[in-house]
Image 1: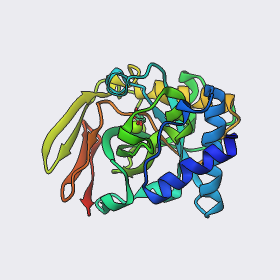
Image 2 (image 1 turned 180 degrees about the horizontal axis):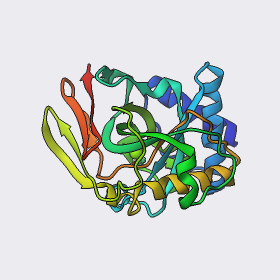
Image 3 (image 1 turned 90 degrees about the vertical axis):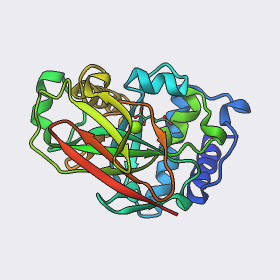
Image 4 (image 1 turned 180 degrees about the vertical axis):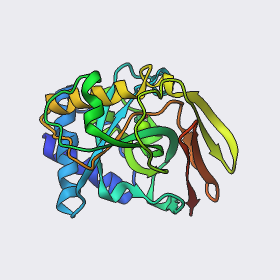
Length: 254
Ligand code: OOG
Ligand code: MG
């Protein structure tokens, strides 16, 4: 199958919340191909009127790489239909087998069209916040190769953002927790995100420029989870707590 057909299969699996078998089992897909498929599938969302609102980094922590059995950093595209308002509800029925993970995110203050060095990144960030990402692989049993997951837009499905605050360069060692009904179900540190979430943002500028994907003023960049992700359960209130940044939450509906 060609890349446009594969993108359509992934897009339909997401829209219908129906899992598919791994594309790499029957198709030869390189990482380059996978990013082209990812972009094509995003085009389907754009055609439905959902604009790009940012990027996400994935597998920036050892905990995540080990959980999913992969070995490299990846990135995906966030669109407007993935936004879940802080404190609102996300319905299980919209997803296949969703998991939640605690993250931090950055809001970009001016367009980025080339790689930005770690030292210069300050000039491009206007705010940061605690966040929760909902990931929902379109593959059966949440099993995939690196190429599969990249083609599937790195399992991107939803995200919730907590209170915005002024950017700080010193977020290297903040405790990060995921809670279900107030009980900690996963915990780690921002140090688990490449040693410093700013390094993840730096990598996002490098990868986006390599693939010709501009990062725009106002875009959100999710830096990647600090812990393994946890399956969502109906009726539970999911929250993430990041030391000195506060909390963000949503309720899991049916
Ligand atoms: C891929 C998404 C990885 C992260 O924060 O590491 C990711 C997956 O685990 O299905 O979002
Ligand atoms: Mg994530």
